[in-house]
Image (cartoon, rainbow, N blue to C red; front, side, top):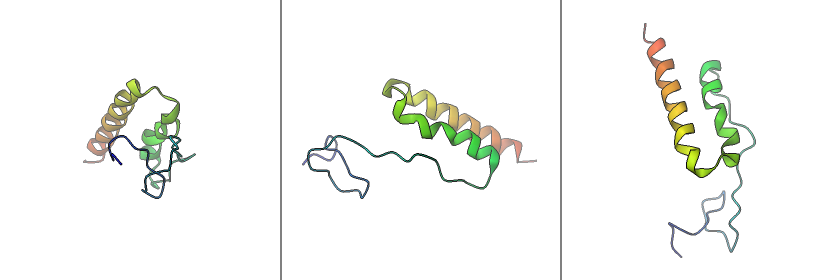
Length: 73
């Protein structure tokens, strides 16, 4: 088995012939409303083309960084 190409189950084990990945329906609350809003795009990531994933992660990174900077008063 090649760990770089074989699908992994939610338990972290290689699946047996299935390329379907389970994705959480919702993101667990961080108990910080602004952070929860920033990471909300994770719930729709499976519907986003892979070529656009970097933009989603960049958006979240920049938002989290700005949120940290705003709280650094």
